[in-house]
Image 1 (cartoon, protein in one colour):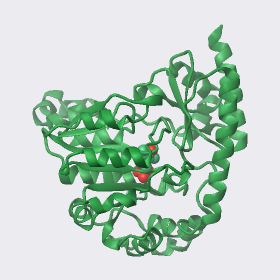
Image 2 (cartoon, helix red, strand yellow):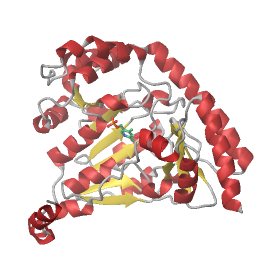
Image 3 (tube, protein in one colour):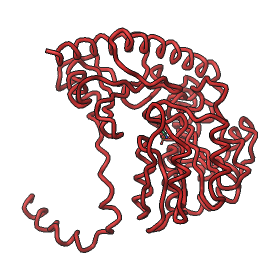
Image 4 (cartoon, helix red, strand yellow):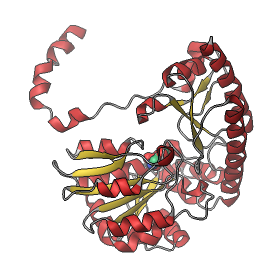
Length: 379
Ligand SMILES: *Cc1c(COP(=O)(O)O)cnc(C)c1O
């Protein structure tokens, strides 16, 4: 059986058929499921601080809403996410036509690429940033230009503006930036928008919008009138709905209408639409999540200082910190103690680790494990 499969999959056949563009893409390497790590290590209390999920779990209102739609699972979802768009439009003060709902905001990044990017186009991103931008660009055969990072490995908008050429189709600004947690201010953003040629699309990824405390932080919606600005937000982070896959884009009606052309008809499922709509009103949960995050940042950064480790001040729900060792070695030893973190090598920062802010208990557990790992590696 196996032999037969191998014969039918001779490599040369693919080589001659495959789109060359996708060879630029390395497949996403998923971590092991937490349950599998538990089983392999024989540890029951494995904690995952690797994907910036909400440690409090899903929004309780979202959770109730899911249980209420279970009897409708035999029907297709509303392909226009009508009620969710209405709720978002009212909350954000935008028009329904200025919204698109995606299977996570990841999908919207891909829709933008499918609608706009062609082989030969260039896409400007910062040196250390979210991987989806390069993935979507490569998928369509566009080239990535990485602008050198600024302070704390974050975005340097002057460098990014300088990387724009006549071939540039889009610039992605991740604010706060994943994996650094650094922020671009309103002034910096406005200067950038006015300095970049008007035919260049500007994507403002605000996945961690709700966590930001700094008053100099810009609200992307203020810039959609420009026509070429697309704002991205998500229900995966503070709302605690990553498993359902819902995100949204906000932009000029004309821009959104092009994204709608390439969108799958039923891209957002029924439980996801219901949960997102309910979670939007879960102000109590949001406040609680934000407070937990602020307290966690204070606790963890004090811990890094005590251990003599450099870290990047964050505006989000994760912290990037340095150790004297390769992040893969630290990762492996942390994993063996039941604590899963994200290595910085995938972001071009091999000595750095990104940790998601957890519950009080999880943060304590993380610091204790880190301390042990550092002393093990120091020997
Ligand atoms: C988590 C994250 C997203 C959200 O992805 P979803 O597809 O909505 O889950 C988008 N952008 C950045 C920078 C992120 O870190």
